[in-house]
Every structure is written in C-alpha cells, then in structure tokens.
Image 1: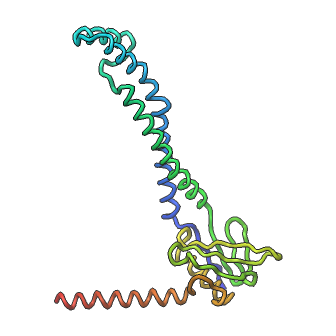
Image 2: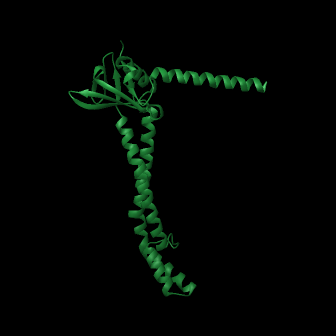
Length: 225
C-alpha cells in the first residue's frame, strides 16, 4: 500500500502569515506614533497654547509665534493641539493592542505551519514533529469538529497513557488529509468514530447534495426556456 502524504495547505499558511505580518506591522506603526511622534510634538503644542493664552491680539500673537517657530525650527502651522495629541495617543495604543491580538496569533499560526506534514502507510500515522501512531493503538476517532472545522482528534494508547493525534484538513491539503482519514477508518473500524460520520458516508452525502443541486439547476433552466 502506498504512503499518503498531506502537506500544509499553502493558502491556509500564507493567509495567516500575510494577516500576521500586516497587522503586526500596522500595530508597530501605531505604537511608534504614540511613543515617539506625538510626544515630540507636545513642546510645540504647549508653546503655542501658552502664547495664545498670554497674547490676545491676533496680529501680535502671529508675529511672536512666527519668531518663536523660526527660532525653534518649527513650522508655523500647528499640526495638533495637546488635547488632540492625547486623543491620538490613546487611539494609537488601542490600535496597537487590537493589531497585537490579531497579528501575533495569526503570525504564530502561519509560522507553525512551515515544514509541517502528515503521512500514513498501511500500519501507522506520523507527522513532521515525529509523533507516530500505529493504527492498532487508536481507541477512538473524535470527529465532533471535523465537518465544520476540519479537526479530528485520534485518541490512542501509548504504553498505558492516553494521548491524542490531531488531524486537520483545513491546515493540510484537504484531499490528502481526507484520504488519510479514510485509511485510518478502514484500519480501525468505523465503530471507533464518535461525534461524526465516516468519510464514506460524508462522501455519499456530498454526492447526493451535488445531485440535488444539479437537479434544481436543471429545473430552473427548464422553467426559463
């Protein structure tokens, strides 16, 4: 019997890597504004507001401000007031936190996918981490999350200790992962499945759904004619 190998689904991997890199980069950009850019703008905003409070005449205020700005190397236009700088700082830190919550887990998920694979021969299952499970060790196949999330948990006995091997047909090439799952079920028996159906049954249900879909499409085409 030939060995079946399921490599990481590149779409899955790159999706999380791209999201992770973009979110993390934007988060760092936001925190650099909050920690570096806005604090550096406060002396100018403070000087402007103090002068504005001291000089009530608009013409005199503008003359003194132009002189002060020139002496400090500032532009004449005031970018932000202190109140605006405070609001912008809070917003930037908020965006940094939000980006970190999205970006870091996504980046780690994408990085963990690199170099991962699962293989199955006629007697055992092994992954890139070196975890090997003989089919006769498997006690149950938990497919509770298989249909919606593509995750199945193979519970097996390892010298008296109960351990698990995770199958994921979203993270790995779906067709190959499904073929591996079908091989496992054929070896250990469908009676070991809990929380789901066998791959053969799922395949039959998908085929039936496709037939019904094709029949509805044909009926609609006939009505339009």
